[in-house]
Image (cartoon, rainbow, N blue to C red; front, side, top):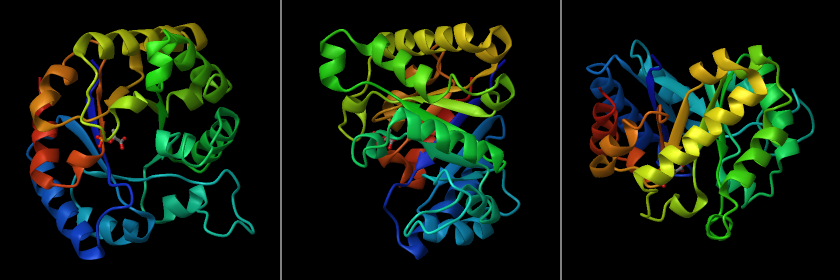
Length: 252
Ligand code: PEP
């Protein structure tokens, strides 16, 4: 049985004080729900402080991005090993705000994924189609391409440390959420692709989160679909109450 995994992507929000307070409240609430895996992904400058606040709690820490080189003259970038040193277990890669806002390609994301895994991080690898692609009936083709070019080059051992996040771009930060049928169909397709690429054991074990306007009031419906193993949450992760309500909704 796959565990449910709820991760909060704080994006470029929170002050230092706000991040500490939010982390403390999430840690307190998540301790009461040990059967659900919970992670928070604060902005880089707050990672160390948040790690301190999370000490002794089951809440995991993640970064929101990393570079594919181990070090070098890359102003403004962060190396995977730096995230490990800051206390991260996870890194989000391929978020649509980086694919579409920063021009990150599948080829770059494969390099980043390999580098993150080599440094000992687990990766939350985001995939998802644009609205125009869905309307043109291209959802499965887009997801297949993102998986073929973004993760198919990994070994099965590496893939075992990758969580996939299906995030339809039209649902991110828009308040428009995928219907249960749309979400289940996409997740089943993604798991089927993983089966084709990596075999039964990896496909049966891989966690596939849904992301896109998950809120307290729609979480339960989405989180109990057969191929949905959790959620990557943006806006609703910035308030402890709404994030913890999503965590609780993941309990079977
Ligand atoms: C996200 O940032 O990954 C996300 C899904 O955002 P939101 O929950 O705000 O749609």
